[in-house]
Amino acid sequence: MTEALHRRGVPDPTASLAAELGIRAFDRSFEQWTDATEPQPLTEFGRAAFVELRAATAALS
Image (cartoon, rainbow, N blue to C red; front, top):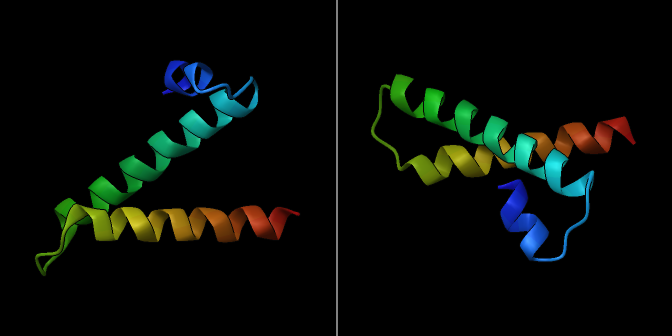
């Protein structure tokens, strides 16, 4: 992910941090998706993970 961001012109440390956060968000959403009792698309859990991430980032500002 970091390399893909670099190719798009995103410098470090932004590219590295964004890649790491993206991986963490995917891990969280995948875990929630596999534990879900009701079938839902993985993308729904992914969106929720990024909403949580944005809220956490805003709280740190």
